[in-house]
Image 1 (cartoon, each protein chain N blue to C red):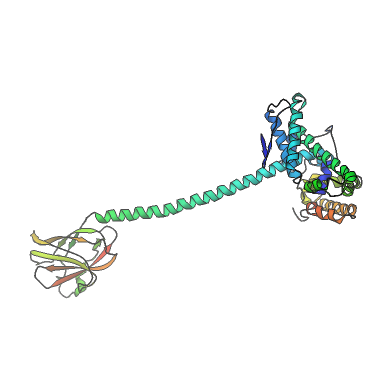
Image 2 (tube, one colour):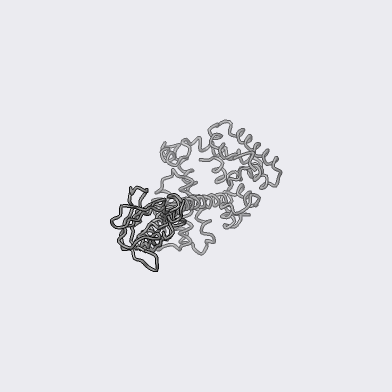
Length: 225
Length: 194
C-alpha cells in the first residue's frame, strides 16, 4: 500500500464537506480535464472524502482508458488485416482480370495484312532488303492476308512463322490458295500465334511443290498489329 | 445485479426491491474503488458491505443528494472501521492476522498504531505547501513545471519544493526505511521534465 495515499485517504476527515468542489469537478480532475493549477487539486490535500472520490473516479477513468486502448489496438490490428486482405485481393484480382482479358483477346481472331508486293524486288539489296519495315503481328489467332511479291504465281501456299531462317522452331503454320486480284496475288491463312512470346521472328512463304522458301523478318507483340 | 470481476452485487432495498439505477451505479462504482484500493480484502466481505450500503441508501432516497458521494463515503467508512476493529481485536485474542494479511495491511497492531502516529506526525511536521505537493504527486502531477504551475511559483522553486518534501518525508520516516522505499516511486517523476 502506498503510505501517502493512505494518509490522504484517512488523515483529513471532512464529514461536513466544507469547501468541497462539485462531484463533476472531482471527476474532471480525475480525468485530467482540468489544469494543474486548478484550485480543487490542492483541496484534496485537506479533505479525505474528496480524495476518496477522486481516487474512485481516477480508477474508473484509468480502467476505461486501458479498455479503450485495448479496443483501439484490436481495431488497428483488424484494420491492418482487412487492409492486407484488400491489398492482396486487389493485387490478385487485376492480374486475373488482365490475364482473362489477354486470353479473351487472344482467343478472338485478329485480322492482319502483310504486303510483300515490293519485297525483294530491288536489285542490289541483300536478304535484309526483304525486311518488312514496321510490320508486326499480334500474339493471337491471326487471320493473315499476305500480298505475295511481284510476279508470284497463284496456287497453294504455306505460310509459317519460325524462329530462324532455317525453318527451326516453327511457331505456327497455315496454308491457303493464293488468288490473283487486280494484278496482286494474295493468300489468306490463319496462324495461331498465341503461344509466341514477343520478339523477332521470320515469316516464310512456300509455294506448293516448290522447295524455295522466302523469309521476311517480322515482329510479334502482345499489342495490336 | 452489478458486477466487479466475478463479484455480483445484489442491490435491493430492505423490502427486496431493486434499487434505482442511480443508487446501483453509485454503489457499484464505490465497490469497484474499494476492490481496486484494497485488493487483498475478501471480495465477499466487500460485496456484503456494498450491499449493506445499498440497502441503507434505499431507505433514505429522499435524503441523498449525491448517490456517488454517499456510497463512496459509506463504503470507505466500512473499510476503515474494519481495519480499526481487526487491529484492536488482535491484541486480546491473537486472531485477525490472517485477515490482515489477506487485506495487505500491516501485520502487527504496533504497525497499525505506528501508522496512526505517523499520520499525526505528517500532519504536524509537513507544511501546507508540502501537503499540497504530495497531493499533486498523488494526482500524477509530478513534473516540477506542473507542480510550479499548481502552486503558482517558478520552475526552480517548484523543483526545490519537491526536493524539500522528499527530504522531509525521509526525515519523518527515518525510523522505518521500508516506508521510504514504498513511497519513493511516487515522490517525483522527473526533475528535468518540462
